[in-house]
Length: 304
Image (cartoon, rainbow, N blue to C red; front, side, top):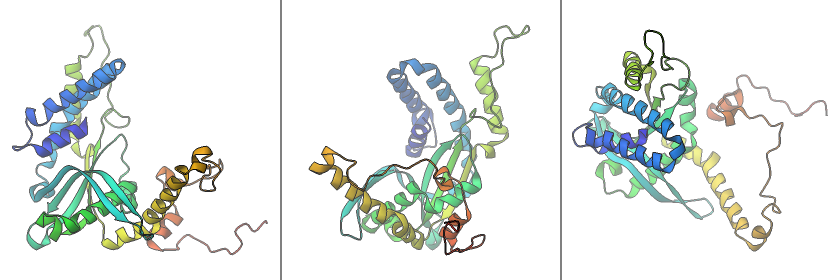
């Protein structure tokens, strides 16, 4: 629902109007109700939350320097670009850029990818730390780098690709601060709190503390960061993926896909905090080469 509003607002000619986002939000929500008839109450709830929160969000960011000095280049643009691997094999990188903008004026202006995310809980330091090696962000930046090399858009072709603006919207009522519930019926108010009163109360909570619901970080990503991501993850992962598909698509693979050593199952007993979004000294070493907190041991298991 939120992305529908973002897309409609981005394409609006005169800021946000009913035609730009509200009508499209309603139409999309109605389509969800038809698709999921048993979940109409939940769909209606989040429709009301989105309709309440989105205009506050637009107003909150309208005065931000990034918005004032922003020249939109691409909005909700799908991409499908060829990516050449070290082996010479070609794969297609596909996706949709939420927004690609030129930020700044004159020679100082740079191109930034904007990613819009809605989250129930937001851990700022963890997000900022991970963005430099985030799967989607880095693949999207690499695709944008390829697209820029052949683009007819002079700003996209001639301006520096500087990084990402990570735009995070906190979903209200998802637990924690500000998660209110409807007032139940009382003696003085037998009907309880109406939907109109409830969402009006939610609106006041968001307006009183918008910085808790709308966050945006500009993270610089240098060309060497993209190169590192390619060498340390993307190239190897894609080469292995092609090998996997060639096996699966072979006659032997179709007969027994688990007969090849490419396939294996992750056993219990393996703990990897990085998979859970955590961090460790090893993570810091991989990112910075700092060995602080680490000890080099020649025998891995001394008891053996």
